[in-house]
Image (cartoon, rainbow, N blue to C red):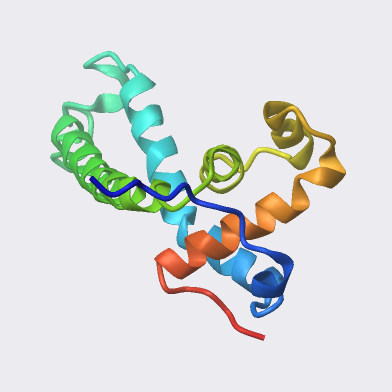
Amino acid sequence: MPKIKEPKLYDKEVLEEYNYPETREMVLHYFSKYRAYSVKVEEICDSYQSPLSNDSMGIFSSNISDPTSKRALKIIEYKEYIDYMNKQFKGLRLRLTSDEKIIFNYSILSKHTDEELAEKLSMEKSSIYHRKKSCYIKVAKYFHIEVFN
């Protein structure tokens, strides 16, 4: 059985082929919908309204509405997109190092600060940048949104 190659960080020469600031922006923009939908699902699931609050039955207004049905349809729409993206992440994660996986989760999907990221990686802030660049470039290449120099 062939041995599975462990993913490696991109070296400096490979990283210099790409416009990192623009690629980073493309990656963050690409995942903005995923982050927004994830937050929306949590908000919708966490919010609890009594059946009579805000006139949800339409008794006091001329508009007939079904907020429960609308909420359920939105949750389904959001979850379908999130599930689709999560399936894409499985293939991507096979190409990332363990540090890059943490960067992907904390920097791209959750938008934590560099300080929080450095703490999670147990590194100084200045030593995470090469790993972070490598991660962003790999993610961009996987989704075909990289920007070349």
